[in-house]
Length: 196
Image (cartoon, rainbow, N blue to C red; front, top):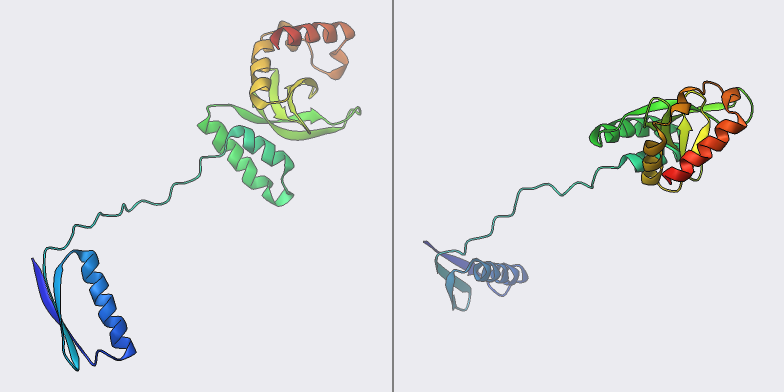
């Protein structure tokens, strides 16, 4: 049980008008019963009762955004500024661990010359195949040669197709770009056609 009395002298001054209003608003919100005696140079506010139970606000931190997916990390790392590369490298490692995927840095061919290669992150599908982000699509890359074996518009499609063709025995025969014969290309197109 709560009870008490507040006396406000000189109730007509602006600061005491505000004080009186604040006290009355607080008593109204608290649920206490109150009465007010107004005299010429003072106001007496008397209150009593049981205050309302306030709902406790949860002491929770605001919800964190969902963690970045591996797909988003691979896409962002490819297009990021050099200053952000280390950050996205770590985000790729964390996302891969969270999604139970194996990632590695692989060399990919960037042109027709023998030395035209670049290193990029890729999701390892098998000993011979990996999925990495290309310029405008997802690329299924032959790991030993760095050559693109196929492409897909989405990350999930690229993984699905790569997993279906990963067991193809001819992948182990190819060690250099010179090993990619017209016959090999024809068989590879057939394998990808069946997988898609």
